[in-house]
Length: 319
Image (cartoon, rainbow, N blue to C red):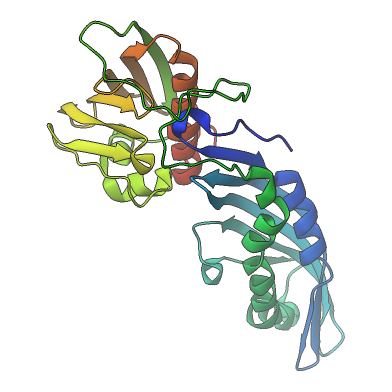
């Protein structure tokens, strides 16, 4: 289980991939769970697959779980008249942003017929609530086991210099950057092409709709408005700027800066959105990135914009 860098460029996000641990957890907690009623009985046998993502993150001192997995398990049971029943239970989505009461349990029975219906009913009425209670403990158990691995003791109220790919101690991290005089900041340009499995309208909307931005930035303090001249603030104020130009479903132009950049210095971000028959491409051009900041800025876009949008809204290509 790899752990990503600490205190990334004042975005204060530490990430640990816990999918392998989660597979073992579900295999332990969801196997051999039984229920009985009116002479009918059922018991889960084994968890046969766990597919998806499970991460523990720290954001500005707060531990956050982000997970979205599909779980399949086998079961065996017996009806009151002695009919043996086998099959599988699929839970298509166990996710951090879905209430356990909303989890769906799809039951399929081998050689299904009417005589086996009592076991299906038993699973839905009695076994599923037991499994829900176990699943309800997953997030807290995940934090108990792995939360300590993403703890970063940092004063997040102070501006920090960008961290390189390999974490190091920066002696100037707690010193505010001076205001930039015109023409004094050496800059470069970043360009990137991102593909998503969504319509151009959906991409445009997810980047400008505050209700959705709050979700993928994981911050209730994120503010944005699809209006030229409006200011925006993301990730608790770590990213700020202004909307400069909008062409609905086609183009977004922003001034954009990190709090760790010299005061008053903004880059210009242009996102050209183009929809094809199967996906949508976002061509991103960012002009005015301070020299020395380009690698971490590029990584922040990748990790905290595109990856989070894909993960949160299912826009990943091939999903």
